[in-house]
Length: 83
Image 1 (cartoon, rainbow, N blue to C red):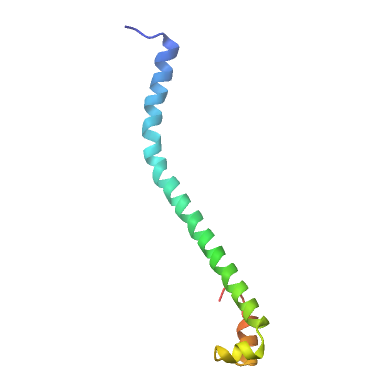
Image 2: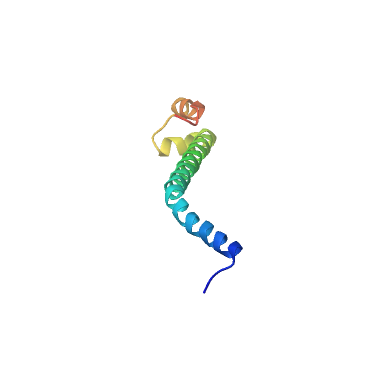
C-alpha cells in the first residue's frame, strides 16, 4: 500500500517530531524545575514578610509569652523579607 506524497511527508514530520521531545524534555524539565524554585522562593519570602509583620503587631503580653521584648520584635519585624 502506497501513501500519497503529502501523507508520506507528514508521516516523516511526525517521525522527526518524535525525536525532538527527547531533547526538549530535559529543557522542559529544567524550565519547570526553575519555575518551581522561583515559586517556592516567592512563597518563602511572602511567608517571612507576613510573619514579621504579625510579629510587629503582637501585644507586649503576647511577646512576653514567647520570650521576646518589644525592641527585639521591632528589630526582627524591620528586617527585609529576603533575609
